[in-house]
Image (cartoon, rainbow, N blue to C red; front, side):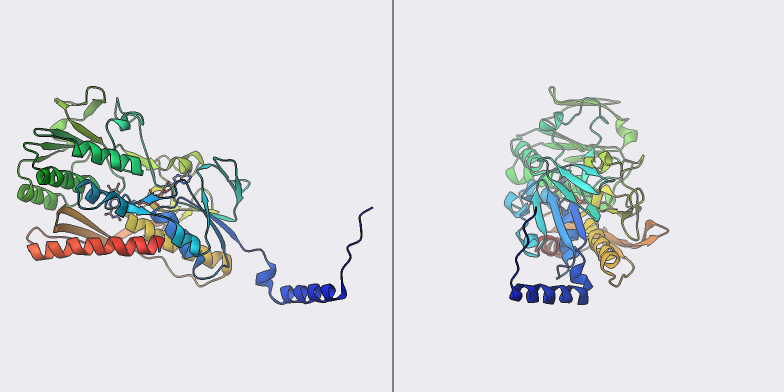
Length: 423
Ligand SMILES: Cc1cc2nc3c(=O)[nH]c(=O)nc-3n(C[C@H](O)[C@H](O)[C@H](O)COP(=O)(O)OP(=O)(O)OC[C@H]3O[C@@H](n4cnc5c(N)ncnc54)[C@H](O)[C@@H]3O)c2cc1C
């Protein structure tokens, strides 16, 4: 027979008072809504922070595989020797201090029926709503001879701290006469100007070290690229004869790479290179695809006005994994989407005021120290898609002063962005 619970008179009064208070205040009586955010990068970390919004009415848990986030944005400046590696590193103390529960683990699966996230170490986290921002994955089999293992020899340098550092070590080991081949991906991919800013920063690093007769050949899957005339003009001014860009009509298609022989074979020739930087075609992060949230494009279709998945209404997908319409895949964009998604989600869960989402994107690219160009636009959700308006881009005839100012602007943007995400 169960023992009776003995309770003092004072205890009864306390319990009665507490239950009256709970009835008078339904917000306390009701369990707080649980939101799990997966991926602590530009999108996910921003969303987790803004979901807290200065109060604890939503229980937010951020699950991230790594304790330190290395920003892909400005990693090209690290490559060019303009920034130390440590300057790209961010921890999650600021986000935890806002009351976000941090779980450092890799998410193995999302059980969408049970609304549960399962981590690699076996933990299960229940959610009312899920925000997913796992970044990009690669189509590893798109280029014959390339693979995840081959990336150890021919780095992509496009995500993950080890790859950024490997690419830099390889670059720093090059000597006179070295040939670098960069394989640039088809659209859509993260940060459209990044492969060309990368070529610029590689050239700058080699020039600064006095490496003679080095060449960089960019074999592109596209017939044009972001800010093309500005980059080509900058290459001629800063690195004459050093960088050659080939579109598919010139190289005829990439047939294969051979990591052992360090060769890249196109329809017309075989390049034997000292460094090959393969940036493969891109798709949504593996977890998003494994969870059935991507469509045939490889990315996750969302309603652009809410970032809610068109496949599962309890999930918002933000950042590079989401189909962006005309919105480029960038840290700037992921941060915008995260704030919009957090506002929409709080409005839905807490009955807060909801305003229409508006996006902007500005993208700075350093061609050389003190010579940065930029482009940008506004982006508005229309009929579920994101449509661009008011685009602008730097001009060819800009003064050296303006270019230097834009380089300072870019540095200022980075401080502002990382403070907004992690501060
Ligand atoms: C060379 C380069 C230069 C760039 N320059 C710029 C720039 O100048 N400006 C700009 O705005 N953008 C730039 N970008 C693009 C920018 O970095 C990305 O668009 C942005 O980081 C996307 O944010 P995200 O949240 O989608 O992904 P990420 O920032 O990549 O974050 C994804 C996170 O999810 C985590 N994750 C993934 N899967 C799991 C899992 N299963 N479990 C737990 N955690 C998981 C990862 O560890 C990672 O931390 C650049 C990118 C590159 C590569």
